[in-house]
Length: 176
Image 1 (cartoon, rainbow, N blue to C red):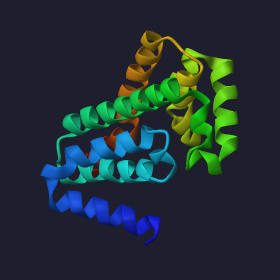
Image 2 (image 1 turned 30 degrees about the horizontal axis):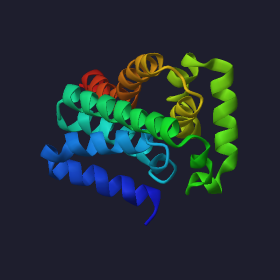
Image 3 (image 1 turned 180 degrees about the vertical axis):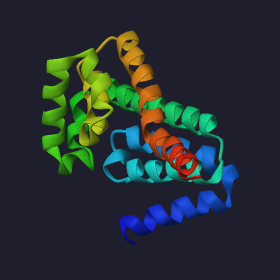
Image 4 (image 1 turned 135 degrees about the vertical axis):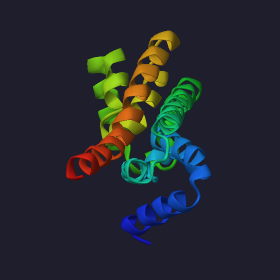
């Protein structure tokens, strides 16, 4: 099954079963932010597709934004905890063991940017998978991590869903 097929299946499922939209968006955002799962799950493009569905179908935006934000927050929180708990052992765990360059890049990014790196890292693909893990490994104070995590999760959730949701609504209003 190709990525396009996966996107199509998920978006079509949500179109036909709108009551599943909130848990699906939560799971996708959680998976996209969780250190190990994010390397395997193409959640960003699916979330963008679901944002477009929101704009087209009239599914409520705000509950999905909250679900995406909470899922992203929880995924990073678990990643941070995992790094704090297991330290450098995580570098030898699959799938990170197959991509050692990600940990090197994530560590360099975190060392350079610190708390801002946690915030900014959420918005850059592979860094999203490892920066919270590295923050935990490096012993970043929890309160600073959680502040950056919370604020970036709220903004990221909006950025994933709003372009499709509001862009399509705006376009439909403009074309009418």
